[in-house]
Structures are given as structure tokens and as C-alpha cells.
Image 1 (tube, rainbow, N blue to C red):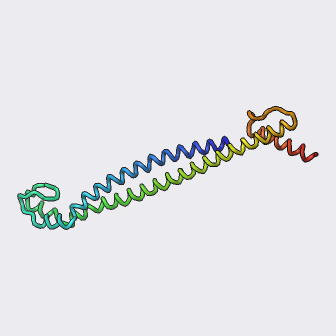
Image 2 (image 1 turned 90 degrees about the vertical axis):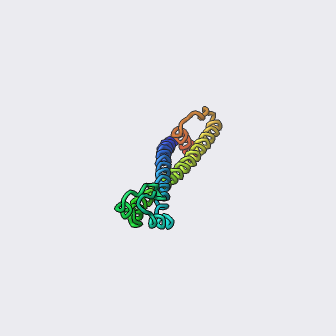
Image 3 (image 1 turned 135 degrees about the horizontal axis):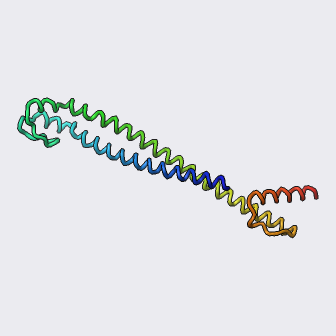
Length: 168
């Protein structure tokens, strides 16, 4: 039971750490998704059409920047906007993978934690049953109450009681 309690504490601590990692990964994914959505809007058909009709001296309807020169106007091509989006798409994919992995790891430790809690409860019930059985045997033999005895003491006493009954 003591080892199970130690294992439960270890898994609980690991689970808490993984919960924090999963939450941080989720927040990062939300940030990158928001950035991607905003940047993707710059590549929408309406934005392409708007950029195509821009003239020097006008403000870009997408970003609001003033078009000062012909060179700048040429530099804001559709291919440029699409190429700017590529690193964000890679980052978004990576963030999704990390968030999924963190959520799966956290779910795994939660399952372990539940299993250890059930095992611990089972061991405690087994201990209580053994203590009750030992008390019953002790009372039958006129010995003292074993409710405060340790698990090993109870097991040893039960083995002794089994040996005595085998001799009869």
C-alpha cells in the first residue's frame, strides 16, 4: 500500500506538470491560429482584387499602409503574401502536433492516476479485510486486538494461524 501511495503521488505530480504543458500548448496553438487567420485574410480573393487595383498614393485596404512608390506597389504581389503565410502554416502545424501530444500525454497520466487510486483503495480494503480476519482469529484464540498492526504483521499472523489450523 505504501508503494502504491508513492506511485500515486509520483503520477499525480507528473499529471499536474503535463496538464500545465497541455494548457500552455493549447494557448500557443490559439495564438498561432489567430495569427494564421489574420494573415490568411490577406490572401483572400477580395484582398487580391483590392491590391490589384491599388495606385501610388492610396492606402492598402488590407493593411492600411500608404502606397508611396511603384516599387512598393510591385513588392506586394499575391505571391509575396502567400510566401509570408508559409512559415505561419508550418508553425501552426507544429503547434497542433505539440498540443495533441501534450493532451495525449496528460490523458495517459490521468488514466494512470485513476488506476493507482483504484489499486490503493483495493489495497486498503484488502488490508481492512485482513485486519478483520486477524481480529476474528485472535478473538477465537483469546489473543489481543490487531487493528493497529501493520500489513506485514497481519500477513505473518495469518500465516501462523494457517499453519496452526493445518496442524489440527
